Length: 328
Image (cartoon, rainbow, N blue to C red; front, side, top):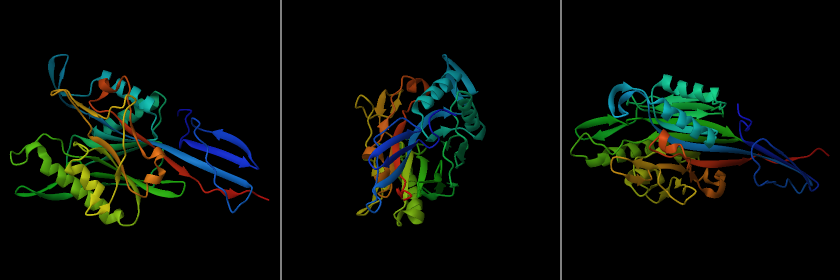
């Protein structure tokens, strides 16, 4: 495992004004909290870096490689190597993935990362209706609960169909705060039906049924959660808005995100040479106070274009532990 702390724990001790910093991850701004006016105060802060990335077909499919048609071909090794370099530089504690293949592909990535010094002991794959493309989570942090919702369906055209990739739900507990990561990959803008151009109706219905599932089980109780992943649509589109509000009720906030040059795109559609933002981190009002700076950022790395047609979106969560009274 890397020298970086498993939980990115940063600890600060303040004793009668003397501060001794013991850092297990890169140093940040220290924070302390008084306890009943006591002079002896100790505070610990746990920091977690959480990211989402569509890794572009980490699976077997028909491909054009070096100008030649290759049926049933895996993701090229050059792309996998570039992917691992980006993940290493990203150094996320929890990484939500989209367009992951079946379980053996996730285990391969986990194994290859470990060989290169980046250990993710927890690897969770969600199997939905799509037999090829899945959502998954790699984590250094042990989850306290995980489940996949493959049974979410909705009326569509002449019948009912399931949410294509389902809804992945992973619970964590950090500094006494229970919070949930929902990983999604909504239907692409390719369509199979003339009645639904660019699959807008289907994608919006997927968003609604996922939103209603979250709301029914968690959304009315002030739960700390994030919805993270590839929404395959723009910031003001109906699929994205379904997760943000219902009526006049705010369900979640979209974290603003730019790269180091101030650009906001996360996806490049090479065929049309179109750059757009389709990947997001949405957080509930209960989780927002734990988001450092109230924002995210788009990870701009030299190898992202070689690894995927998407760029990662990242945020930092900060969980102060309760201060305690020093022994008298």
